Length: 367
Ligand SMILES: *Cc1c(COP(=O)(O)O)cnc(C)c1O
Image (cartoon, rainbow, N blue to C red; front, side):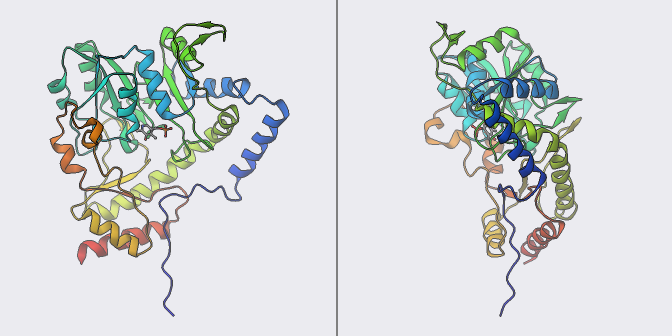
């Protein structure tokens, strides 16, 4: 009988018999006791903790990361006729949020760090440009020093999509600190995720914060007076409470992922392009994304060896049919996208599993 191969899954969201499971059960008990399942103290408590964590005046929790982006753009009054410059490499929610407020996404190029290339921004600025939307992609912070300079020079608003980098630090400040408004997803796949859909929006501007608060509940003020017709974007209080209880284990998760990344990088830096880190920053590892020539063949080879990988994303947002007519300057991005592959990096992996992945990647390159 042949020995069965070890299995390395890309992500395992089941909650085994751990402290986390105990904590979540306690949260459920507490919420059943008080019965506040919409808004209430669980939401206020989470918003307070998150605004302290990110050092921002205001945090508003919302129904998802996508909704957070949408409301962030609404909050700074991006609308029909406006253009928003963003990276072409992100989860499609980034471009969709721009589209859904009626504006046009405009795509600039990226660098080897998979983040927006600050030098490519000015080439696509027009008189209609209203805002820049940065993505802290894969967990690596965008280069905010030059980006903020460009934004201020051209009088553009800055929106940060920090969905993949919550917990990362740039020049001493955490992800979520950099936009006039910053939007973050806490869906269960993210490193700091709840038990369902939830997102958060951060700002220091009271007016923007108030507007978002009104927009997230049908555009009503005090639930009585309609200010701006809108939909319901409130987060579930139960989920907010679950998320709150996971804030204390976040540092441990980030640390374990960083250890795995270091282990990968040490052995793989000679066989492929390993993840980069922006200067003056401390990144997190939402994904461990390598760049390698025979990407598809490697992915198949790893699958044959019971190792699950993901291509995030097979298409640039600018290559998606509804956005294919948008202005784009994405030469480097179209090369890079053919080479990206995400290796498993969730905190539940053992060193043996990581070494097994390393061994197989090296075997593939040598064959
Ligand atoms: C996950 C993600 C989103 C969307 O968040 P949801 O909570 O899934 O709606 C937006 N942008 C980026 C970069 C993401 O990774």
